[in-house]
Image (cartoon, rainbow, N blue to C red; front, side):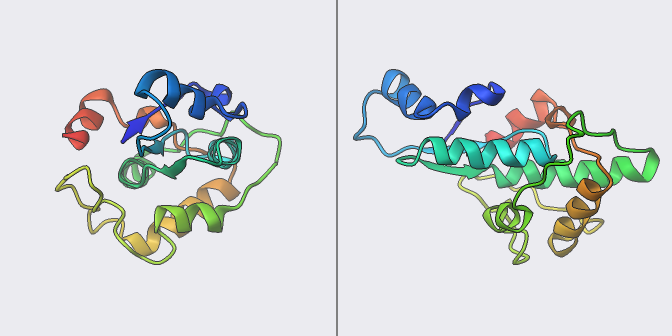
Length: 159
């Protein structure tokens, strides 16, 4: 597993394929890339553009981190308003396909990944509600910044 970012840089055709060849030593090694970014329309579109630009790689959204983002955002929304998305162009993406990739649409628990985490979604936000919460958030033009998960939380999740 590998996390790679830098916004639009990874949407350049072959960018992750080049990164894999240069940093991970060639084409023979099977590597799964896990995408993680802001949860707004632009973040969702970035995932799909990156996947399309690197067709020979396995690229999936990092479901455990996205689930945690949704949980933390739901708790945050109870206390105060979530921020408006910096992307206000009104361009949407394939939310149902993104949710399916996260396994939220089927109600599966995406936290049971090979990261060997014991974290689970709290009862305050069941997996069946997560997709609806995100859909409503996007419809309101809001977003969940990836920074809602601080470094220590992410590091603990990846152990």
